[in-house]
Length: 320
Image (tube, rainbow, N blue to C red; front, side, top):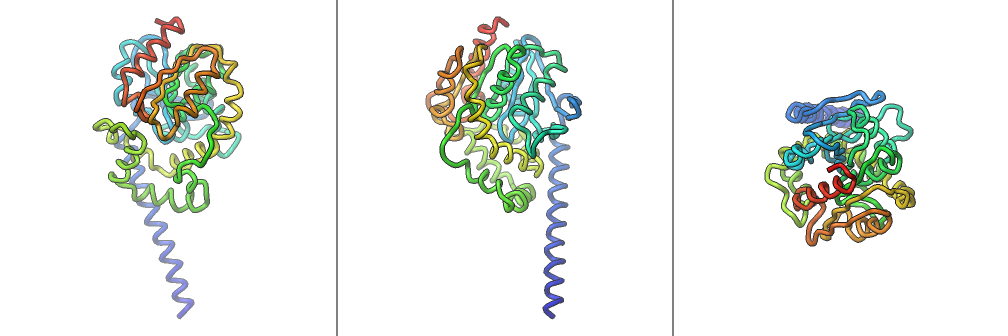
């Protein structure tokens, strides 16, 4: 009887695993159908890279944050700026419709590898010396881009960007996903069962204290963000970020290009005083715009200030 019970338990667990896998695959397929690429998928040295290009004028590379995708910029910013700039929104590796970097050196793409991939993509598109806008984690990638390719960078706009070392632990989600349990249990369960209520709670936490724009969640397509491949890669990227930032921040004084920094004082994810304030002093030609009471998403919560910063940057770089 005991042997039969053990066999039944093993078969039951296996059956649950199969059912979970089927649900995840079905949700992933649905997300890909509902939110297809809106631009080209380029082969960049063997890596499929999704780029959304729109507008005319000076080139601007747009780099999204952790867990996001190109649609963060197509929601409002690109429609408002496409008459002044040629805007190039690029999905980072394993995000949106971009794949993992071919022949990468480690388990996860480093800031430098991501910066090199985006630089190679920009060159393919004829953007030889663009302005580079990076938001949140994308701010760290933008800084890496300029450090590695200074002659191919006209200027930086760092929007609530990660730039300097911090003390304390990461959010509990990242601590949990940096474990066997997180990778093999928590992420698959999230991919299979996350619902609109949980997605809205996450969105509120990202935007707090500002409200998320109406329709933003539907536009972004959280089904893309909760795919296991994106969740796992994003978690590894964030969990390995601090030592890279410690090394990268030692070289900010080498950047001679114009930089605009825009950051809210109420940002609870990437603190203004930890990142923006010191960065403004480390860079030789930086101007900081501090937004009182604004949270982590100023390119939505205070879009006019973000647009004004980009226009200032273009003038400082001699592009307008």
